[in-house]
Amino acid sequence: MFDKILIANRGEIALRVLRACQELGIPTVAVHSTADADAMHVRLADESVCIGPPPAKDSYLNVPALLAACEITGADAVHPGYGFLSENARFAEILAEHNIQFIGPKAEHIRQMGDKIEAKRTAKALGIPCVPGSEGGVSSDAEAIGIARAIGFPVLVKAAAGGGGRGMKVAQREEDLAMALATARAEAKAAFGDDAVYLEKYLTRPRHIEIQVLGDGRGNAIHLGERDCSLQRRHQKVWEESPSPALNVAARFEIGEVVARAMRELKYLGLGTVEFLYEDGQFYFIEMNTRIQVEHPVTEMITGLDLVLEQIRVAAGGELPLTQHDVEFRGHAIECRVNAENAKTFVPSPGTIRSYHPPGGLGVRVDSAVYQGYTIPPYYDSMVGKLIVHGKTRTECLMRLKRALDEFVVDGIDTTLPLFQRLVRTQDIIDGNYHIHWLEHFLANGGMEP
Image (tube, rainbow, N blue to C red):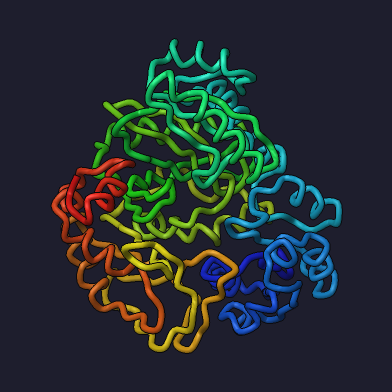
């Protein structure tokens, strides 16, 4: 096991990793920008190192500063959390060159799955079903038109190096395609420094279903069920639940085993999430995230497994202690991402939290790094925390969520809590009848069901 782990992140995920380290008896190092000097994970870690000013490029993305922090403190492993450097293959390689363990997948797999075109090729080779589309990047408008005609409109133009909905445009008709290509290329170049794009068939009312996997890098891998992340705004997940209301047991285990078998063949190490669109009984691979996900707590709630703890164990060279037969799924879990944003306009609302009272009770969990008097800085993402509830059934879970949302108090800033209070009382949500475009339509209709 590791002697000391440096947590190369901030906010609730840094605190989440710190807690897992404490339960394993591993000392921790918190790194922070000057804006995060009073952060909760900094207060609770065994050691802390300031790595730069507020801008992420000068602190949390500053690889030399992170290496220096490891050297100063004697950390022999780095947990990257999610975001920042968590899917940076070169960072993993640099750590290895300095005899520091990256707690995550092998660099080759990060690189392989980080390029959306290469990821799709790999998925096909591993027997994972994919969305119809171009085999690789499209080099010209003429080529794109030919492919789009073959797969049928509407089509989705996607950045090869994309993520978070950037470099992604829909062309409903052939005459829309040239503009969609130009816009997607420009966004991709600005966001990722790479203007390569590819085409996929645009599905009209799919669910977003993702499969959680865990491997030990030796050919052992299991799946931990699915999460339904279909409630999204601008391609950003808002509400996640497990199991999905759209899947039956047979479909769940069939796609889970397809993915687990692929990860065994790949000799995948650590946690990963294979994401699909699901429509009319068919799964279509869209990407793989080679890191822990924001929404991992819903999987923990229904399996009883500490995913971060397991992630650390396999990174330290341990064999996977579980077989697929050992994994049991119990009840239903839902997560709401509570952000410091206006619930109607979604304008960010950084500022000082005057009062803070998280909900409690059986089956209620809040993953958050904020506290009364804490000031949410304007430099990073706007997450206040994640509310996760668990119940024996989906109905019980929804009732518990309704109660917990009404208990949750965050004063001094705007939050998205009122949005979730509306959603949990909306009939389509109660019925589990929604898709990836549902929330956009709901918001466009002023909070009325589509």
